[in-house]
Image: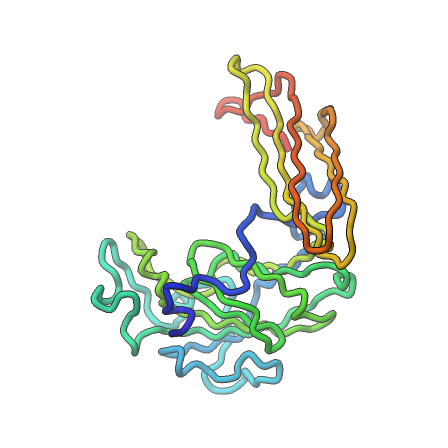
Length: 305
């Protein structure tokens, strides 16, 4: 069995799920949230090279190699993100309650029908990212894909409506790098995705490259429960901190709350610290009082940051 038709395999080397996280150099730029303004963010959307084969077995061999020539027959430019059926390849399929292939074939599909897209592009890693962790995020790929960077296989993912993220720190170098992606129209996961919609394939959402410090916020949650009188609240923040460096690290974490005008709201005990061994993860939690905060409603659109 291969990854895309083995029900036991849904990913290889993929990062665990977490909230969206783009790093910024200061509180002001983080509050604005314009990810393109961050020095540690790159959007890899654009024109990539593309080849479509009728089945994985006939897809171009060795296409992941840096020196592979993608100027030959069968290769063309394609816009990323896009669905290849909307760019003149293959055909879109609409179903409501039926699968697009015979149910007797579960968990597979017709052996002669699994259109496979091979994508290639190059991207730059800034010199200033050398001491940091570099991540590659696919916000949407239908239905499954393998990933290579500079000719080395990084991992595999399936799940057409979920992001897939990989730590590619050990695969990239400063300067130009080669990215290769092989996308399968059908996978065993397709059996779980039947609904009233069009079946379309490809890299159809943003592709993002970003960089985090070696000690970073891995994930976080924010809760704002109100008291029984609907008057006062608490700001409950839990951040999962990870030390990806080779040395023990002391970590200080602070929470800043801004009102809708961008003014800082005074909070008591909004800083904490912990020590982390190399490779260790640890939660830092805050439970802070918020006296009579403005309450959001569809009539009063008040949001804090």
